[in-house]
Each structure stands twice: as C-alpha cells, then as structure tokens.
Image (cartoon, rainbow, N blue to C red; front, top):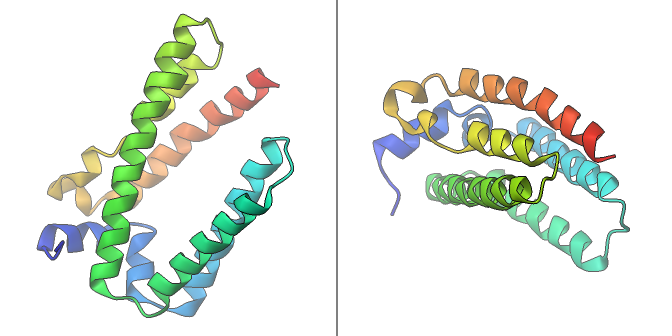
Length: 158
C-alpha cells in the first residue's frame, strides 16, 4: 500500500525510524526504554495517579512497538511511520488551535508557547525529498528549539 521509494527514503533517513527499520534488539530496547521514560515523565507532571486503563494503554503500545520492530517488515514500518506523521499533524493542529488560539483569547500565559511548539513540530519541511537526507539535523534543531520553550512553559504553569 505504502510501497514507494519516497516513503522508504523518509524512513531510512529518520533518526528514530531508520535504526529501528534495520532491526537489532539493542536499538529496540533503547527506544522502548526512552518511550517508558517519556510516559513516566508525563505521568509525573500530570500530578495524578495512573489508572489501570492508562497502564494497560502503555503496555499495549509497548507490545505493539516491540512486535512491529522485533522482526521489522517494511510494510509495518511504513504504516507506523505514516500513522505517526498523521498523528503528529493532528496533535500540532489541536495544540495550535486549543492551546494557542483559544488560550490566547482567554489570556493564558502559556498560549504563545503552545503556538511556537505547534509550529516547530508540525511535519512539513522534512517531507520534501531534498531535506529527507537531513532529517537528523532537522530533528536535532527542533529538539534544541523546543527545550527552552518547554522548560519556560513548565516554570510559568507551576
């Protein structure tokens, strides 16, 4: 379905999906560990106790990631990549609209930070074939630009 040179080039040059698509248990367990740390951090900052449903969702997600990358099949990796890009696009749109525009209209101090994060992380420039080879650099630049914004946003909301 998604079997094209363009998607394969996007996946191979991506800083996360590239090593995962080539396989290898060491890379897989490192990324699964990173996912666990990210979920734990979000849970810590949410100031609520995790419910059984949330824990089940995390375990199902980890199982799907493990199943998909244990013996990487090109079509499964492509479906994961496309679904991640669509999810990221929707999340950026919602963050821009709800956190940014509506937050700005309600005079919430973190509204501008939501707008900036949505603009930084919206999938766009890296989808062009010329920039596909530079995805690692684009990812690092996005992470560097996001770090002070997120840190300042956390300090404002506390």
